[in-house]
Amino acid sequence: EVQLVESGGGLVQPGRSLRLSCTTSGFSFGDYTMSWVRQAPGKGLEWVGFIRSNAYGGTTEYAASVKGSFTISRDDSTSIAYLQMNSLKTEDTAVYYCTRRSGSYGSVYFDYWGQGTLVTVSS
Amino acid sequence: QSVLTQPPSVSAAPGQKVTISCSGSSSNIGKNFVSWYQQLPGTAPKLLIYENNKRPSGIPDRFSGSKSGTSATLGITGLQTGDEADYYCGAWDTSLSSGLFGGGTKLTVL
Image (cartoon, rainbow over all chains, first blue to last red):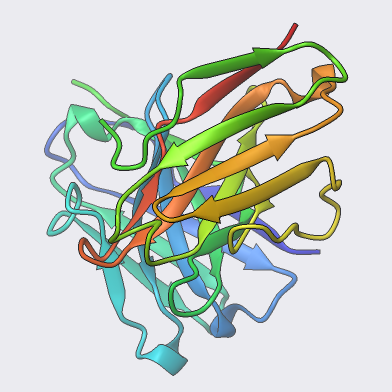
């Protein structure tokens, strides 16, 4: 059974940093691109970014809203993906979901999702 | 304002059919595949449709997807009260090099 479990959320002050973890099991983690999606309270889904598998260079893509502030990384030895969030702003307050990205060129979809972890940025 | 445009809400009676539209542009829906997600209240989103019209294992055939040009449509037949949820379309935007979601559509089963 595929499982993704996020951790590391909580209350943080504006300008501070936070690192989220996504612990996975039930699939060959190293073969997949891992992605983060967030949802502000009462709002819709927003793609944050993803990290490709090492077979595709382990390269990353980010939404314009977080580029330069957020960094996604992965540890294939432990099957964990990370989201490092720096210089946090109040508008980064959201539930952050870890997702497994599937599909090939031109096909981007998220077939498994974690339960989400809430990040609240407030003084 | 989302790049992918969905109606904020739709409604229909139990047993009826409903469609949800998703309008994009030549750089996203016009060029790439569309996926659809269901988010029941208080839960994480779930993949309903991928690559325009394919259903993951376990998704009933009451759910269907289609795409034409720069628009896509999710269809749900035989509506049930358990289908009340928010529905999101998604696609990759080649020009932006970014994943996109529609603003979401709230389905009410009257």
